[in-house]
Length: 321
Image (cartoon, rainbow, N blue to C red):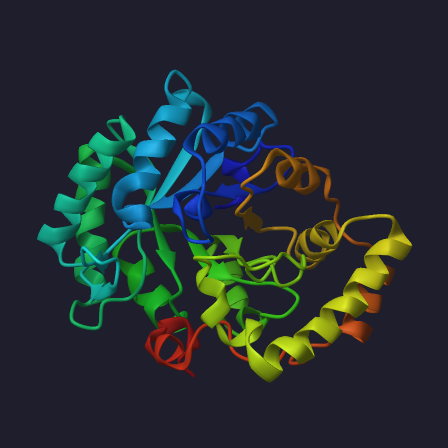
């Protein structure tokens, strides 16, 4: 998401809605709707979802939250990730016929006749990216999609996609402890004039020190478990010490770091409570001196463990070198 599409959003952050559909444990729909509506009132108008979040629940939730407010928000929808009835991952499908079918269902669940950004959640190794982008371009011409995005893909795929149709936005993980996009992806986005929505800014709550409860899938992720978890707790404690000294929260430090390092891009935060929303909205870019202090405490590569389990890391196009 580039700057010209966020000029009305003074907070320069977006709301990622995945956590409102059970990814981190039990949630309450009425509370989630209140958070979405409060975010809109505070100028956080870019809402990110996926048709597979909660197997459709997330889109239905957003529809209730934005009823009567559709013209105040921009909807980003990811598609292609397949789920089985037991909620296991079933691969990726970005075939043209499939994605047009997925969008049809999304429009009904969201209660709208268009989405602002439509993007494959992951690269489908069985489908050329040109075919996928070409099919979304058909939807753009038909008025069902306003712009095309990508998610977790690398430079070669981005270039191929951009030759078919202009790409508005790349969704990619980026935080104090996940900096790989700096090497090749961010320079390419600058070259091609593509924006970015940056997710995982808090590294799934690691940098904020959030507790892991029952049903929370983070308990099985590499950075939270075993020796990795213990090592990362020490790193995070150092960052929390900086936050206390500066009079901000750990979350505001993590958000401010991204705002300071990548001012052209938009952090996407999974805020599930009004307190988290207020913290995020109040976050300010860190100064050059503060960025240097963060670097001293948590230099690139200091985190223990990968951001996803090994099998998933191996399947990510954005991780290919």
